[in-house]
Image: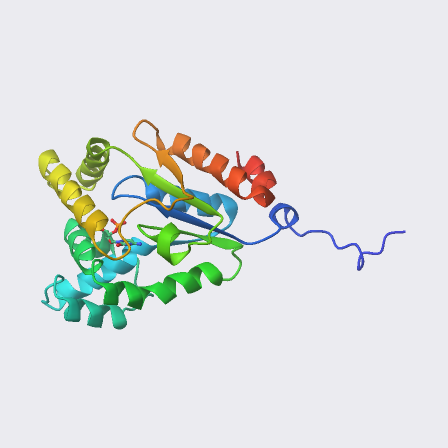
Length: 242
Ligand code: DC
């Protein structure tokens, strides 16, 4: 006779196959497809998702709205110290001006320090009901979550990234010139990669995923393969998702 108290049945499939919590770190340059990939992985695997770029954009935007200069460290650090992390879905965060301001404030160690603990706590204690978290940014695998079992560095050629960003802007009805989009991306790549603190670079143990010739679906499937390789306990759930 089976005793339901001593032989508890898992309530869901994922409860039966995902034994421990998981952190996935996704890094890469602007417009490489990190955000789309992070959201798809999070949704498929039941993980929470944090777009860390939105934190830097929110700081940059707060400075711009107050009439300040994002390239001034004291102003940027004050905005980072009082950031309202509950307002990260403001559409104004997605504008090129917010992205440019974000890249400037992100170069300051005091700004990065002010945002670090929020990101680490999100990874450690994801919102209720999630078995872990996906974080995407520039320094997740190198600084924020250096112990994450799964690290993916998503990249694509500058031309391909500019083409995608240009198409997004056109679809949103914004006026855009391809050459200007490409030059802004190159400028941002340069600033993000050359700064002294937490520069954009792959962690030594990151899997490199070049999406130049991949559509979103193929990139997602390649990322699932990386998760299955690096987090063996999640293999069955990954198989179910595929
Ligand atoms: O990913 P994004 O375009 O939203 O990021 C905006 C800027 O924020 C980017 O130019 C660099 C900075 N950033 C960063 O320095 N570290 C992160 N983890 C995320 C973003």
